[in-house]
Image (tube, rainbow, N blue to C red; front, top):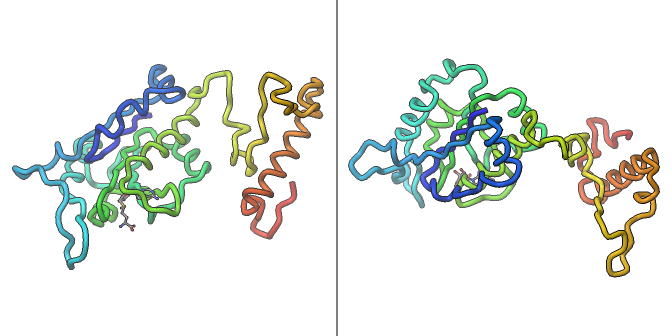
Length: 239
Ligand code: SAM
C-alpha cells in the first residue's frame, strides 16, 4: 500500500510514522508513506494555499488549485472516474463518515493507494470534495485545528490491519471492535503488585476457562462503557 499525505505543515509529521508497527511495516515494504507540502503545488508567486471565503465571513479557505495539481501529480489524473483501481482520495473532515474499525478494515482490504488531504482554517474549497475526493472521513464528533492529527490516526488504524503488519507476536483479531466487543483486561508479571492480585483464572493454565473469562470480561466492559455496541438492528444482540 502507498499512502500520500497532503498538508501545508509537512514538518508536523516529523518521525510520527517511524515507530513500532508502522515503522516495521515500512521497513518490510508493506507500506510506503510520503508527506507532501501542498505549497509546492501553488502556482502564484506568493505560493498561496488559502484565500478569503466567497460570501464573506471569518477565516480562510484552502484553495482548490494546488490540491488539484497535487492529485494530478500523484495519481496522474483529477478525473475521479479514471482513478486506477484501489485508489482512494480521503478528505479528513469533521463532516465525514465516522472512522470505525470496519472502515479501517475496508481500506486495508481494498485500497492500494490512499491520498489524504489535510484541511486547515475553515476547511477546503468544496470543489475538491465534489470532484476529487472518494471518501470524506471524520475521526470523531469534535473539531480539530487541522487534518494532520486525523491523517495520523487514519493511517495508523489502516496500516496495522495490513496483512503481516502486526507480525506473529500479536494479532488484531482480539482487539476491541473486531468482534463487536471491547477487548478484555490484560495483566502481566508480577502476579501480585502492591497487594493487587491478577485474577486466579489467568494463572491456572486452563485455556477454555481463560477464554470464557475473557469473553465475559469483554462483554461486561462493553456493557459498562459502550452499550451502543451491543445494540443490534433489533435491539439487544444475543451473544
Ligand atoms: N469549518 C469546519 C467545520 O466546522 O466543519 C472545520 C474546519 S477545521 C477547523 C480545519 C480542518 O481540520 C478540517 O478541514 C479538517 O481537515 C480537519 N478536521 C477537524 N476536525 C476533524 C475531525 N473530527 N476529523 C477529521 N478531520 C478534522
